[in-house]
Length: 230
Image (cartoon, rainbow, N blue to C red):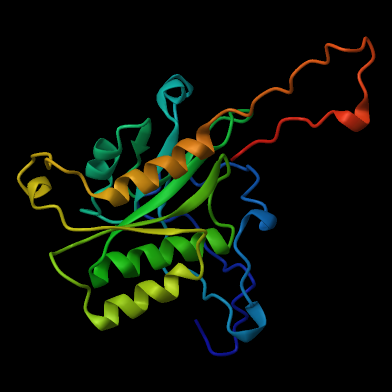
């Protein structure tokens, strides 16, 4: 992007290779559902590449509680969804496009912690910020899957830290040797339980208010409607 380009004006882009559609005319995630960022002090550059869009069959949605989008090959989204075992569905390198009128579901981006993975998820986050994603989901956060045992090198750790300020939440899943050979660990990482509890809370239906039993007339001042947790 040229030095004099305004990073907050959408770029002129056409269909990208690998997209399953040119993108239906649907509303995008409203600005008030995005984390706040001081655009005046730096802003976010436009993405240089984009994920595809996948039209989700309506029949599939009954079994989907939340989405996991692996932003690059080998991101670990399939393994992550299997380990979570709570209604997730992984969509490799595509944003899910759901039919109009379908309830919104939480969505997490999944990437490895190597340079390729962090760079790929940075591009996906830029898409979200520039409103280049479909609607029908609520962005819940970023899942970083360890690409190797041990601590992240300082440059990668710093890069991941910068990204954490542009998304609602970040979860780090440590290296699990058993997953590499297709096995399950005797003690799953505790971080999985943290992500699971958060996503389950987001997908839990709002409870209806208790009916008034002491009076035949409902008092508006004493009644609080249920609130969605999504």
